[in-house]
Length: 303
Image 1 (tube, rainbow, N blue to C red):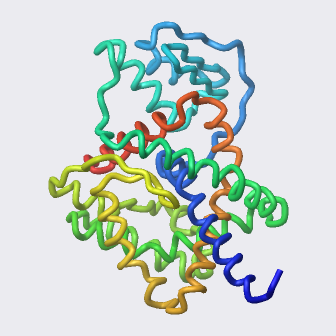
Image 2 (image 1 turned 180 degrees about the horizontal axis):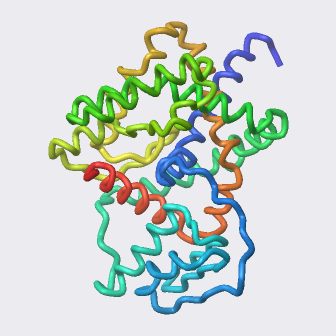
Image 3 (image 1 turned 90 degrees about the vertical axis):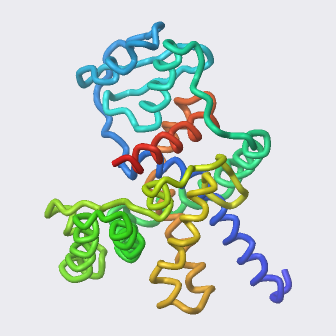
């Protein structure tokens, strides 16, 4: 291959990795940044034909497998500590038994969104997942967690500012305290010392700020190389980008791009098993991700 083409190939490959984060990023945000539950011994499955009782069964004692069978959905979990996505989908089916249909979610561009969703999933399947699998083989889990902590520590500014915009002073104080603790005692953010001390993240963003002041979500939208959004959250993501410290302290854009690729691959590697379990448990991935994303955003704005 001519050397003159090497930078182009590397750039295209990098953009592909960034694009692959669209599906995995939506799953991770829908899962509320939680880690995969630890495996436990599973007893005989409980098969549910009446979805009304699903919300009760997900709280069954440890060791019970819950299987939901209703319409075209079959959701199975190996632990009672089910992921937020599965709970959200199960709850939707339970609600459907009372209304005879799912509550219609505002998705006027669904045909386009489904094509883009499948495009992004293929990028993840054939590019990001293999790269993350190799990365996971080479890089120890403890190092991956440290890398994730460092990136999270850098991105405290949008969370702190949006807490201030919404008048959530305790959230702003927590974010600033976390940054001080983790940047000093936590060795530049490599260790989440603040969490050990019980100082949790505020998890605020500008999309939530807009919703806090009454802005409507607008249509659901999926674009190539991007995470699922609503129009409101897309505007919010752009504003949060301007508050990203990396855009000011790392002026050389190839360096920022390389850091973004590293963050995406590291995050995907940390969640290989979690996403694999979700993909194997849900039949209609598009609807499950859409439902979980919209419901979670609605819940976060109300909190």
